[in-house]
Image (cartoon, rainbow, N blue to C red):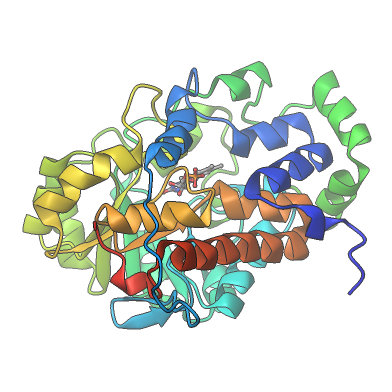
Length: 377
Ligand code: FNR
């Protein structure tokens, strides 16, 4: 196929990010690209990966590289999945379904966010057996139970409970861009729409993005505080997690773990796994990079439960680094989102291909022909 968009010339996830930035209005781009406060933690995630050096071993037969990974009895085509991202259709119209279908085609997990801009039922259909569900615990127990019951009915068998949002993160870019509920049309917004006609047209076709799973509940919302109360709660505790564990019959993982003792407590409560994550540096600016937090966690709970790592994955070698430090699997958030922003479905495919080819090369260069065999040595 002729590469009219020039996507084949995007060599890295960073190249795709720059392409996305050129096609998307500032306020929508920043919504995904931004982090908490000074964004130190967001930058640190990436720097810390780069600081983990890997020493090649040569004269190993690497003519047949196997990067498959098995989780909970299901074998995936690559050791990374799509992290849950809320309101992603605001970044690029139709992004949720594009990514859910990509994950099915490439046989990797797709995690449907509670706060997605597409319903969890439609995402389950699109991901077709590769869908996992991410739960935000609401301040209203009925809202939480309603989501769990819907996820069950839609056929999800793996649920991630996100623990790292006792309050919404403070994102300075969103404040500067005057993002508010209800959405306000400012002169900057108008300028952004005119400067990005493709995004504006697609948004017109797809309709205004919303938080689809709560569309009815949020109809009358007049402030961020209303939205937050529906979506999250500062009162989520270990007692609630215990109840969720008893309630959810499928696999249950806790997302947003950074402390070894929290990881140990998840194991004691019978959780099947954790996601070592700092929400892509969107919650706090002062925390550790996940690749730095990982070794102590792996030492505490490795072998007792599945460990997944996200936040800062931008290169195939990052998955190798994560596995070498004790993770079983990884999630990419922005990396795949930037692909969609750079070129819709073809951009998403390009992002996947870049990560996959980089990983295959890393395995070959490092003399480890199978991802499953990557260890600390
Ligand atoms: C997120 N993340 C997230 N996590 C979650 O559990 N539920 C959610 O709804 C969201 N929403 C969300 C929106 C946006 C715009 C971003 C960028 C991230 C966090 C996400 O699942 C994941 O932890 C990070 O994206 C990982 O960091 P990288 O890969 O983006 O660096």
